[in-house]
Image (cartoon, rainbow, N blue to C red; front, side, top):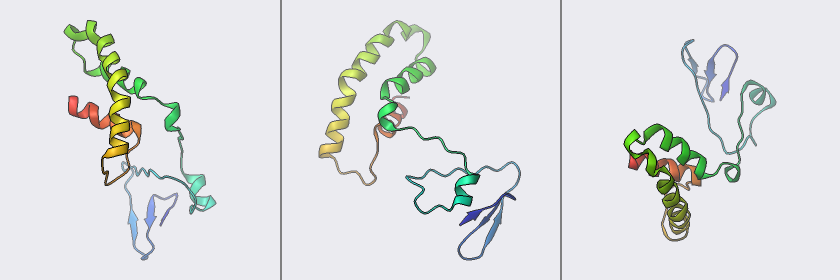
Length: 117
């Protein structure tokens, strides 16, 4: 497939899909092994290694957004609970649970925080 400058998505079948001006298409890929130089030059990329972004920063943002004012004094306890339980739970999931799709640490923490909302 090719996405050109005119916001036309050209598929292998020859079908062309025209995107409107208010449409945005985002792709998340594991690598760019099969991408042409033209494709790479048209995309904006943000690469973050999972080991550089820990779950603590995600929890901190979640606490600021979703913890009510009456529970603000307990944020340090919430952080301690996550620091105690989250690494153990993720290692258990990776070691003993069958995952239809492999989830990385950030995806697991996002899923957990969605459940807590």
